[in-house]
Image (cartoon, rainbow, N blue to C red; front, side, top):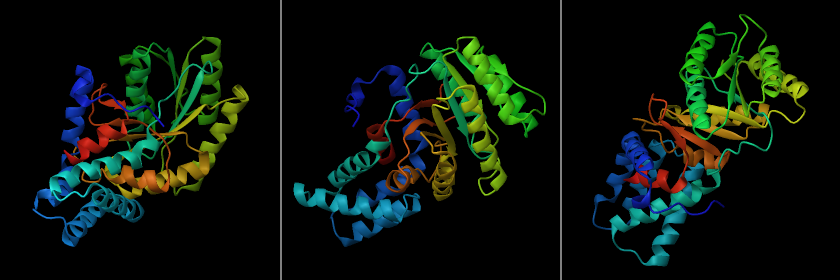
Length: 312
């Protein structure tokens, strides 16, 4: 289990600014849950209202049942009678539920570390790759991008813009085969001594079987370039899509065996509870969460921060 995070008031200024953004982003989700605790007594009506609020926030039936049972146990143990204190206990319950998702992305065990990034169109995949490139560069890693989303012409141009902004190299082929582009990128990454090769893969819907087959093909071909690769298989999901996001995690994990998630567009969503649903039903680690369009609007996931921002 990860070490407990530093108290929030001691957080570095940059992290403090991020927390403010996260709180603002989750306001729609949090306010509907927080209003449950404005009454004067803890009774069945409070728990019923809380159950409704959690389900409306796309927490899912399993996670909602788990949280309610855990919360009732905490209230009983601590003999709490103040609804405002119950809110704090719910934050603890959510933190414990989300804690297994908190995991750091490790770079350096392999050179290059090959990261394959998947996600349906519109989830913010290519933008997230741009932000991830910046994050890795800030940590001192050299990055090579592979534009393997060759079906969507705009994806190649979009990735090239991010490569330019981050001053990193990009491997691309007009109308090329996605697996071939990925193979070339891994080979080039190794030859040029890059720390990370980020592969942007095609992003049609997971219900389109040929997409999953193509992603599996990219994975196989990448292994021909480096038998240990890919070292990470990340899925980018749109936090606004709620239960649909959970379905995507299940579908892509079945096809590719995911190692981590990047959850985007948590700014202004009313469905922030979906992380709880993922934790309960498909606990794939959440490496990063995003709350905005800027390069710096992607941060590492912290269970306690998220729970507190959700209920603030």
